[in-house]
Amino acid sequence: MSTLRYHKNAGSVYNLHYHFVWCPKYRKRVLCGPVEQQLKNLLAEKATELDIQIEAMEVMPDHVQLFVLASPVHAPQHIANQLKGYTSRQLRESFPHLRRQMPCLWSRSYYVGSAGAVTEETVKRYIAEQKTRSDK
Image 1 (cartoon, rainbow, N blue to C red):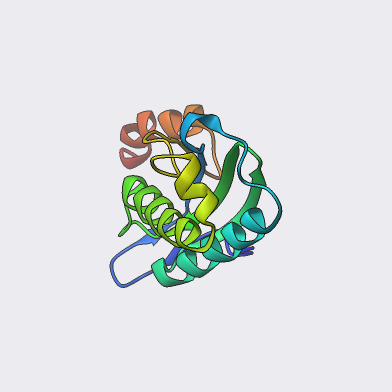
Image 2 (tube, rainbow, N blue to C red; image 1 turned 30 degrees about the vertical axis):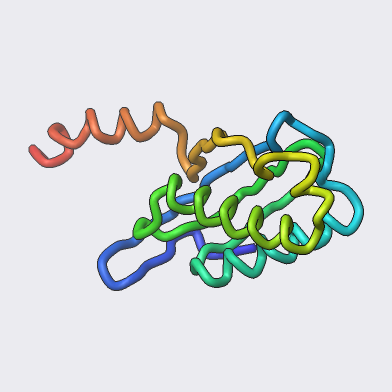
């Protein structure tokens, strides 16, 4: 877990956290036991490859929840597609029963929400007050 409030790369300073949730196809309860453990390992592996940090992770039998810190070079859609694609391919290869039970591992949809250090109202107020601050 990152203790820094802001992170930076060559062109930006950022604090981007995303909450992702996605489910197996038909919301089947297949993410149990060895599948769950391997999924957690695969998500950690792919996150390292993408240079994103998993701040929190929970795998339930019928869905995955992730809270990640990511740089602005990765769009949320790219992160979700990479994580879902990689884990689907690897898990279906390792666990043939997943191939037999389902046409694909993950449903096409997912949820993503952003989280930051300040509220939406604080940002709006800050922007609205810029003109009065610069006049001083």
